Image (cartoon, rainbow, N blue to C red):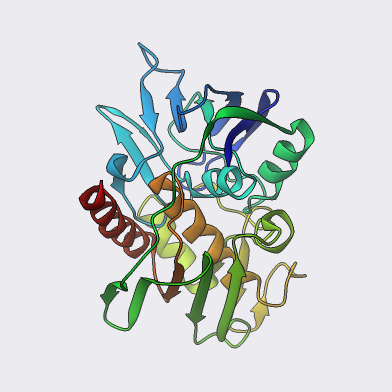
Length: 278
C-alpha cells in the first residue's frame, strides 16, 4: 500500500488542557518516508520533534514528546486522527508546548483532514510486524497487551465506582470508520479529582466545553455522543499513543484500566521486538 500525506494545509487554534495556553497549529503535507513530526516554530532554530516512541519523555495524564530542550505535550488526539485517517507523513507546526484540546476529542482534526483530503505518495508503507506471541505490561489490576490476531483490533475496558460510568468495554477494528466510531469520543474527568489536579498545576485549560465531567449524581454536561463515550475515548488515546510506532503491527491490542504510561511501555516492548527482527 502506498503512503499518504494531506493534500493541503490545515490550521487550528485552541487552549491546551494542562497549560491553559492558546496555541496555533498548522499541519502541512510532508515528503514520503518522513513520518509524522512536530516543529516548534516559536523556538530558535525551529526544533523538530519526531512522533516516535523514542521521543516520549512524560506520560502524566497525557503523552509528551521531547527533543533536546524542546517538548510538545498532549499529542495523542491529533496523532490518533492522523493515523486513523491514513496520514503517514505530516509536518505539524506549533507555536507552543501543548497541542490544543479543541472539543476534547479528535473530531475537529478528522473533519479537517477529510476536508482537505489525502494524496498518495510513490513509496509503500513498511510491512507491518505480524505478532507471533503475546506481549504484556501490567500494574496491579491494570494492563495493556498485544495478542497475535488475523487483523488489527483495539479493545479497551474501564471500571469506575461512579454509576454513570461503571464498567464499560468497547472493541474497534482498524479497518472500521475511525472518524465515526472513535474520533468523536471526548476526554472525561471525575468531579472529585478536579480541584486536586488544578492545585498540582494540571488541567488549567479544562472546562465543560472541552471535557465531560462526571460526579456522583451523573454527568455535569450531557448529552454523551455515545452511551459508552468514556471507553471509546480510551481507545482514542491508545491509538494515538501506539501511532508512535510509525505503523501498527498486526495484532489485537487489549487494555484494561490502563494509562498513557502503560500504553507507552507496551509500545516500547513492541519496538524492541521490531528492532530485533530487522
